[in-house]
Length: 180
Image (cartoon, rainbow, N blue to C red):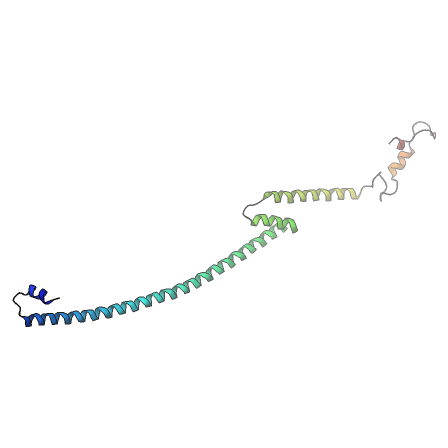
């Protein structure tokens, strides 16, 4: 505030009164400026503390989030391994083991299940079962040419067929065996 401003407000004031008013005003103004400066300093100090605390809090939070992420990945890996073990056990229970089980598990653990792998496994198992049944059935039968028990000797049916002649027992007559 200037002297002219005070004179405009108080037109009848003397120079001495104007000086007192200006001095009082400047004194109050200085006090308020000092209080404002102090408040700004305190505000800036508190803001700095808030920012530091926020940053410290963020780093702790980020550390905890990193630990949570690591534990989540570990849990998912153990869960997937557990699922694989359960599936392997279930497949072994129905007789699917080894490479067949590995191929089937690979397709089950993937994004899409390939049922052709299961079809191939089942077809191979069926072929193996048929081959095993044929082998078992053929174990008790004589070998090729209707031989004896071990397949090397002539069986009774062949000996009988050799002995059959049509008509007389002429050497010129063909045996039934010769007709084969």
